Length: 244
Image (cartoon, rainbow, N blue to C red; front, side, top):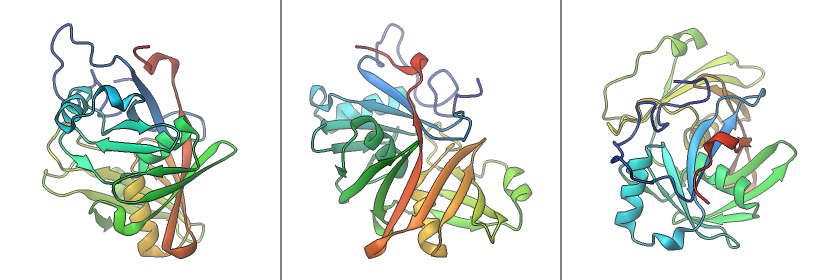
């Protein structure tokens, strides 16, 4: 596994096996979302810009499983920001890092998801989304006494989505975190998870600067009207784009 590959990278041990000769990557852009300050790390996201070529949910779910990313986004209307999100095994009404990646790629002021309308904007090197905590899928937020404890954790048994976190510097709002989906779908650890960061921000009621996984960075802040803002860097590596 290279430094920029996450657990869900095809060929890195994540996701379903792809039949020999199958061109599952055709027309799929691969982004790295929530990159660190030096441009490395981030969680890899598959984006099918032309979702209309695969309208059936069953076909989308099958492709998401074959790609093996933590999440794959299908764009149904690039101008209005209509998107559809899948893990390798299930459809999600909302998810943080797919929305942030899609907002960066499409450069739209909002995204329309089954959960609701997600606000989006660009601010220098950061892309931001704003969403409600109740839209996020359930997560167990598990606090630890130190960043070292979080870093030393083994992957827990499947069955529960665990967001392990600890203060690195509570006064400064700096958090060390790791995410364990527990879905038994080949993704044992998520490199960066916007929905979990959103939920933690909602619980703590303050802005956070989160280092997750091996070095991904997630910035959050409570916003107006019970919205939570989530920001991060997005990259489109030249080696990670397949198809036309």
